[in-house]
Length: 384
Image 1 (cartoon, rainbow, N blue to C red):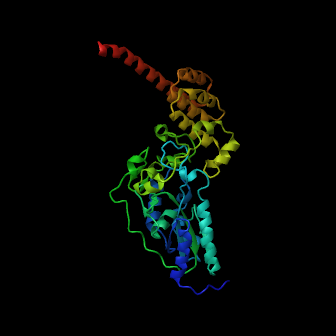
Image 2 (cartoon, helix red, strand yellow; image 1 turned 90 degrees about the vertical axis):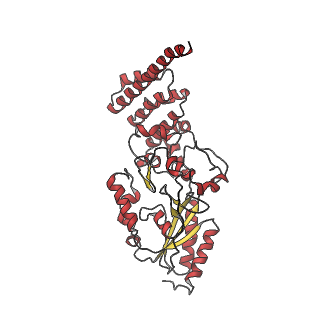
Image 3 (tube, helix red, strand yellow; image 1 turned 120 degrees about the vertical axis):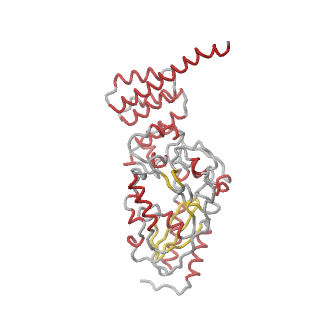
């Protein structure tokens, strides 16, 4: 084993901090003690069902909040908050893909952690990089290390960036002193809570994953009909609570607005092309049927009758999950021939869930037509 150089702990941390600062990252240090209150919160969400079917740190709360279980040799965790916005990420509410998932946004994290770990190992200490890993609740580590504070959205926030950063850590046996927690909070600001399109932020810092679109898009099965309209143009991820967060305004406004693939583009792609586009996304079983499901909802929410042909095509798809969402989409776009298309599809449909969806869509279209007829009959009387 290499013999560590004789260097004051403060000097070692300062060298690490300077490396992080070159990439615009904020750096802190915490010990390897357990995160008891965080574990209790995770267990409570799992027990209540609010974690939905999310895995990751919810799979084993004890492991995720007990660093010494995974790193019994370690004495400190060096934590970095790394900005991930880039040109094209400016303020825009019509994105189909959340900013963090638009390309490989973890490249900067990997690069910085590699430099930090190399410096520690060169100095004779053991170091292991860890990020986006179910062995560690990274937001809790960042808050205790003083690089962020807990936001009411449940996101970690840091000055100058707000929520627009990713978290990476280097676990080490170097005897680094913990940095103090950040003396900041959201105060009276609740901008993120009403901004959530599905009211998933049920209390300050508490998110019901059953309603959070970012989690819904990563789940199996049909999307709850009560959430489909609220999904808007989104296909993967949701930035609504992030873009509403005032501490992140400066970072967001400094960038140009770019574009993301349209739902129509995604539905026209082969599975191979979709897999390439979604290589950085969490997709259950890596099955592109779930990306297509999300895209069908987003396409329907554009409410363009010209999209009826695409939706009608998916109404004949071999996958019942996609037929369900195509049926809902047809009544949502409301083209003149949507009712006929659905009635013909119903005659040939054997799957009970799809039949239910088609019947519901037919009823919605029929009800809409009746309402328009009544409106037409009443309107002349109002003018007489």
